Amino acid sequence: MDFCNHLVSWYLENKRDLPWRKSKDPYWVWLSEIILQQTRVAQGSSYYAKFTKEFPTVFDLASAEEKRVLKLWQGLGYYSRARNLHFSAKYIVNELNGKFPESYQDLLLLKGVGDYTASAIASICYGEVKAVVDGNVYRVLSRFFGVETPINSSKGIKEFKELAQLVMYKEDPGLYNQAIMDFGAIQCKPQKPNCDSCLLQYKCVAFHQKKIALLPVKEKKIKIKKRYFNFVVLLSEEGNTKIVQRTGKGIWENLFQFPLVESGTSIEMDTLLSHSELSPLLKKEEVVVQLFNSKEWVHKLSHQHLYVKFWLVKGTFEEELLIPWEEIEDFAVPRIIHKFLEKFENPFL
Image (cartoon, rainbow, N blue to C red):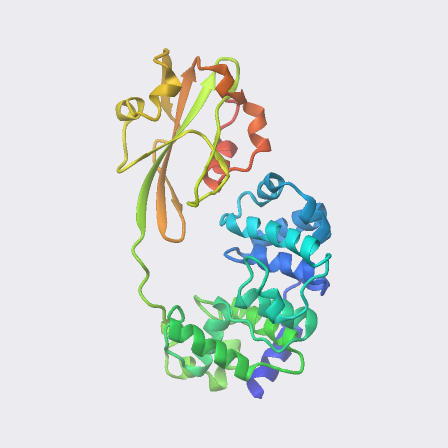
């Protein structure tokens, strides 16, 4: 089919030079695919380099401590990806004797691996005819074929998967999958696609019907929840502070943070100091409180927006609760805490 041939020809001339494309080792491909979920290629490349250097084999990853895996992952967000990665590495080593799954169906048994990731690994590493469908693929297919079914609907997910499978280049599925993904990322971009130089323009429905900006279609997003976080940064005269580990199944599971006071709305200092979760830490000692960021930082997650303040509290506290400031870097922390630590220098000068 011309569609496939054009995509493959375009790819051979324009493909991106990405580190994970230098090998068809399924471990390395799997690692790259998990890192790139919800992550831009430019950001993911540096994390891929760190992980392959520290964990060059699945055995190295399986034997690592979770806190080390989370620390290397710090800044990427969606930490369940890192936990699933670590869990699956141990499963491969302990249950499969270190042998990586070699089929789409077996790859789906790995925790954190869904249709897209299994299709990518199976096609690239084993030549299995399984089409990948990600944001780039949705965009290319919906525009070229003029499909207006919402891509985030159950019907759309099924329809696009079937279409992707139908039109793919079956002689080299791995090559084709990488071609259509790169084409969507470089040529058929979300905004300002390069239609004038597009070799698919002659049959592109969206181009000829002037629907480029309208496709692909997405159903209306769910309502975004607002949450207000007040992180309390204790600064003792001895150069110590306090961090705690998050528990439960919510955001940032098992990561570390400064003591947190969550409020229903934005609050001021008096309300913070009288909060029941904070008063036990202060023990009514003389303290000096200062707001670090005068304007709330907005941290956007998939279904919620966090409005974050960092409160600096200097004084004397119970030492057994504290750790030296310099030890914070040994703990895996959420991205918003990492941002604070980068901006907050020399706290005891």
